[in-house]
Image (cartoon, rainbow, N blue to C red; front, side, top):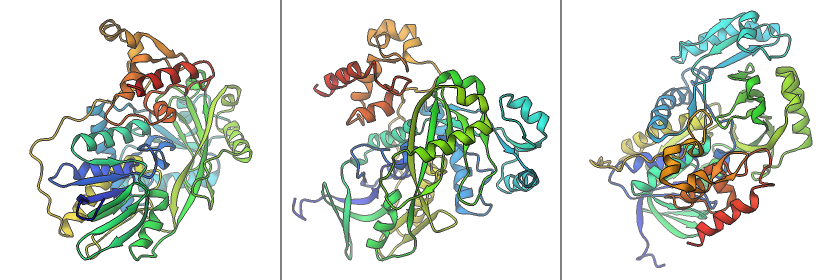
Length: 463
């Protein structure tokens, strides 16, 4: 492709995780040419796919920070978006449990912090009230802080819904397009990628684990990303009666600590660990991490250790040497950094997108609102608290493919696999199919259904 043939986009967003997809979607509401670049072969295949999937109220954020404002606003935005698109959200509530005198004494300050953040739903309760809410909790709890509006959701569906809406609105999604360097010119920036050159008037860096490297290409040296590995254990659905709300620890300076939480898929999750690494690709689980979580689980919910483990996995968070989100616009270089977005990015993503939009407008980008936009996409439901296709007699009567179960652990039907493969953003491989349907995510982990799932997937991808 020659320079003359190259399309010039008004904005190129680097990174199709939740935050990058939300930014692209927000900008697609204006008369702009927007491209969304993703180094991997699928959206949401990096940090965004492996978090605790909690929709946070922001009660424990540091008051006055950008993170606090973004989480508070993002909670409302994502809740509304979920109700329109069908993203599963369960308002389970949470209890932050104090296990010693120091933690108990910290609860009133956490209550005050929640109020300072604009959240007034918290309450300090005694041990009897804690055990009334959490009868399977381990012995020794001294008190707790209730957070009734904390919720659980499906991070995979959130990411896919945002990216799908963006594409439907006209965003050019390019996967397998890793940015390797940039050339900042007087009017345009040329991004040299593994998928060929891409030219932009403005660049938004939402590259997550590599955001600091991209930032250096634009002449900065203001932060360093440290990949922080979080390992988690997922217990079988039979464990769900043990935990009907999120059990939170008193947070520390390095994170929110190990929690126990139900999932929208009907499981129970224990984790995460917090281990700083050098390797930005190391998502392997470890024996040490597994033993650490088991010890924590034994204290938190002793009976949980009697239940079967469905899966273990690890994700990497983009920890930075900065106490807040780092979001900044450089009008001279026509560049916006969106860095240091921790696990709260799931909740804050849509608010961050609004903030980036405002920064771009203030920096001189003309924003003309589109008067007509397509309807938001309707996403397949992956949550157990809501009707699934195999339970819908009318749907099965209209299309028998929804009555043919392929994955019996997760009750995934042939129709769901077909729909995923024919979607606006179809899965490139089986892992992507897992995130869109839950196929092979159950207790057998594909041992019994893997061949049939793969056959259905390959049949659809040959079409």
